[in-house]
Image (cartoon, rainbow, N blue to C red; front, side, top):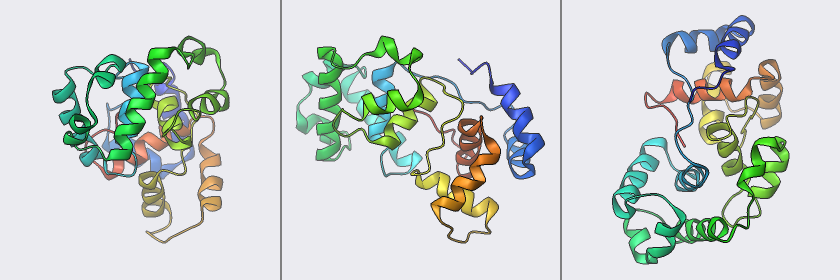
Length: 205
């Protein structure tokens, strides 16, 4: 499912920002799309923490092969050793199990998320062990398809901004935040294209 706002966001960003316009031309026809149910989206974000897109994909593929399906009951039924054998660190395996328990116990309220503001969803998700703001922001972008998320803690986004806007120089997060103001209310879209500019594989969670 491609977000209904995507073409409108593309047009607005292309008018405002020639750098993004060039990136979008290079990736014509590509778009963000919802790929999975909430649990799988969050699980994939946990897997991807602090590693490259390619490394995360390798671990994810092994996890899918090992579990058969990325679902709370499958995770809870797997041993810690089996999860680590898929390439997860011991800590990420613990985080994945805790996430599965929250879903199995009904401790988080999936049905309410579509009606909640971005910051409200982030506040609820970050009560789960191993889910920080970055992971919650990935969920907002890739599952809830929120249009104006700006995950400045993401190392790939920082790298792309430095490369395309500052000649590769290191700049402060405050300066990156100011740059992002030109993309409101479509910062999720700008972020997705900046990620894509670094890697031929689309970013997915």
